[in-house]
Amino acid sequence: MAKKQKKTFGNIVYSTNKDVDFNLPEEEQDTLPPQQQNLKILLSKKGRGGKTATLITGFVGSNEDMESLGKMLKNKCGVGGSVKDGEILLQGDHRDKILGILTKEGYKAKKAGG
Image (cartoon, rainbow, N blue to C red; front, side, top):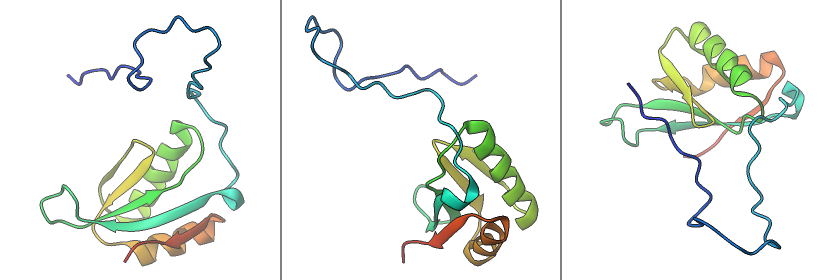
């Protein structure tokens, strides 16, 4: 069973200063329409034993919408992957195919990295 992550606010444990505003992150964001999304498609080998993976970052919206986009991309590419930490991860190098799919769906997407 996975451990639940605790919310952290830097190194601050307790403060008696009432003038300090901690700018706490919001729980859920409204999902931007596809035309306003700036998605970046990256190729990554980091931490995967040398295997390549396609990483899509920059999605602004709720976790449910990001998971549905990830599921759609996994189905159209016919690969496995995951959606976590604000990123969509697909197994293998599918940058060109994903770029075509996202632009067809109306998203603003571009390849990033080397």
